[in-house]
Length: 147
Ligand SMILES: C[S@@+](CC[C@H](N)C(=O)[O-])C[C@H]1O[C@@H](n2cnc3c(N)ncnc32)[C@H](O)[C@@H]1O
Image 1: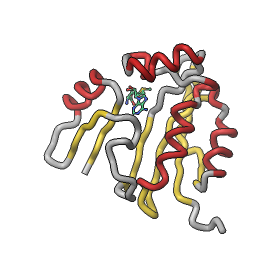
Image 2: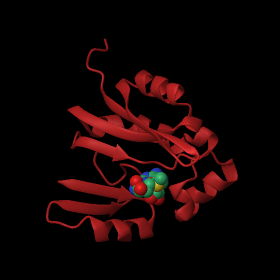
Image 3: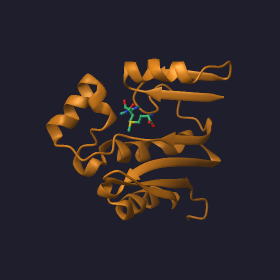
């Protein structure tokens, strides 16, 4: 079963055109707000709004949920990413994996430290340059060795 979520109505429409099938669903909502906090997911993939933006632009994106929600990441571009990391754990199966896109401007080492502190085991699954951005994909799993 594949479930896709987004806050933006147009993104939801576009996703419905691409993801279509009996074993898939597309729901509109903020992060995991649509779901009960139960470990439903084997794999969670998130390409968040990661561009550093001033607080006004970030707050406006939260209210309007328009195209600006696709980039406005607030301070260090980390507002949505950090909220996602704080929220995701209960929805992930014991051996589940999260793949999360970050950019250099988000401070990759600090993002990994933040995730590690929350109880994830974290490494860089991939990286590539894309225009002016250096993109990374972080792979996160529940750290079962933590005391
Ligand atoms: C960088 S774009 C990625 C678009 C597309 N999913 C992709 O991977 O190419 C970020 C997407 O996250 C959505 N988004 C922003 N804040 C969100 C939130 N709190 N919960 C769910 N989706 C959110 C935006 O509307 C936008 O579609």
